Length: 221
Image (tube, rainbow, N blue to C red):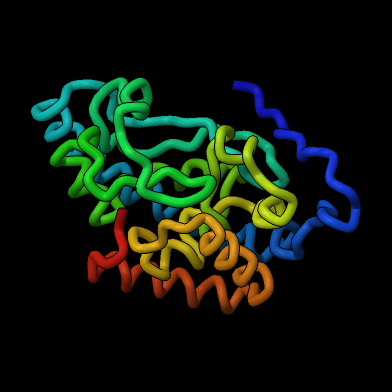
């Protein structure tokens, strides 16, 4: 799929001004992303075989799940994950109640999630293929949660600022109990907090915090 940019509504300059955050042009951050992605993809290759075997036993279908998401300044890309739901889950979404508030979709007991998928989500193993998106430069190791096109279409002016940085595999939201945060405005607040506090050292802090959260299996969705 060719990438496109989801255009912002015609907000006045006083409400929204598109900016490029320093992290986007940081060569050091990009180098860390590349090195981290290579390590991550090596791990992904190792775990892919057993995941594929168990997946075919429970719910035969594609190993990977892809979906169009919006990244830096609304540019779209196709995110890739290990499939954690039944085949054709997107067409069943209308049958599942959204327990979140605002421009996110969450349901703690989504019936579309398979038993293997539940394990992959709790351990965050489903996220591993996103290292490919990082290697391609579509995402970063640390950034904001990449929203869907449908979510972005409903953005208000201040929501667009969360897209002033690249989407990330992890970030403030992911390390602060992501399954417990169901208010989109809180997600936005955390994303903007990341932009304000950003530094290479802070990225490493969030990466280590992510590893700790994953090992404790806390806050997984």
